[in-house]
Image (cartoon, rainbow, N blue to C red; front, top):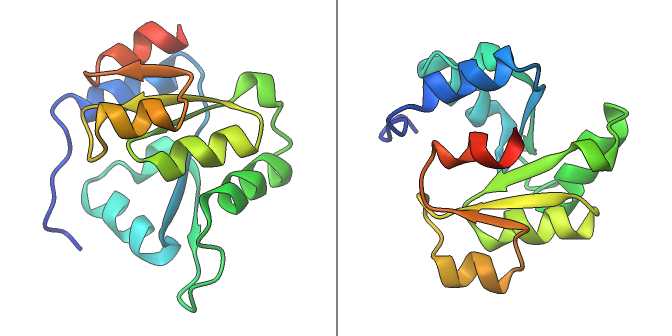
Length: 134
């Protein structure tokens, strides 16, 4: 669970997003209880308003449902929300909920996978997120 590392510049990006007034949520297909532990381990949990993921029994694992839950339960206006993800499930979940998406080419998914899923924006570098959202 802890055999990964933050992308270089991630803490700085999260700090910058928070400074600009963005409210950040985690939408993951992983069990929420594990995602929360990972965020605490890397000392970035304080950047996120809420972590929503699957339940340990496997329910609530579909990204479309997870994003819908976050939108509904936080009264978010779709025009003010963007999903950042590195796999097609993130992009499809955003599209199914009527929100924009950023395909993160620096992650696990390929440019082909993210483009085929019709991400609104595609970026290769972490620091390009600020160019899209500002």
